Length: 287
Image 1 (cartoon, rainbow, N blue to C red):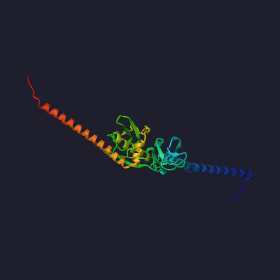
Image 2 (image 1 turned 60 degrees about the vertical axis):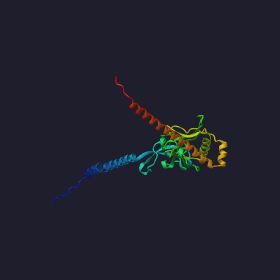
Image 3 (image 1 turned 30 degrees about the vertical axis):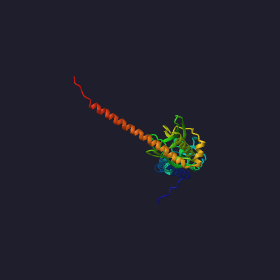
Image 4 (image 1 turned 135 degrees about the horizontal axis):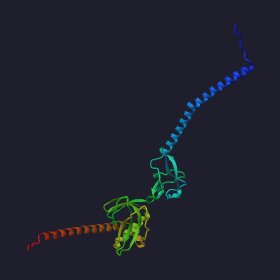
């Protein structure tokens, strides 16, 4: 029979120690492999995804204009009222303002709160500020620039027969133009000035005419220099129909001047043709 071998206590401790070392080594190897082949790749994948997400967010971000204070309807917006903020472009409306230059000469169409993201639909050109008495009006008795076209800004001026000149209405935007007719927006105050100068011009031989702003974005409105004539004002109050008859008078003058110019051109053309014909039939002398 085989005898069982018994280990001494010291040998048992040594064997247990060796087993412990082997088990610990296996555990360490397992942990290392776990980190190497699973945890680290997962972390890298997560970091990569985070970086890609951050990059994607950056690509979708854009700088836009927002308000840094409350603004009332009709108030002119200035540089100190706005700030630049970054926002996700996918969440923004299409008419958003991106540059500070876009608010130049703009006023608020409505009351706006601080931190509001500014869009074009919230603003108006300073010249187009809506007032309760603003009306669209056509004029056919004012002498227009030949090259006047919609979008131009003009002054309506009053010129006396002696050449002295006065501004009746300042920096008006032309909405439409058809031959001798122009359309623009005017206030009640401007209407009174134009009516007064119209009646005065019809009685004194003066003329109403337009001048075009060359650089309207940088040129401020001209100062109004025409003064309401009190006598004419009283005449209009007594007989408002005189305004229309005065308009017709000025319109007829313009048409008459245009006809005279056309007739003069025709006479010049006929004269030139006649002179040319005479030259053609002159006898030629050959020496």
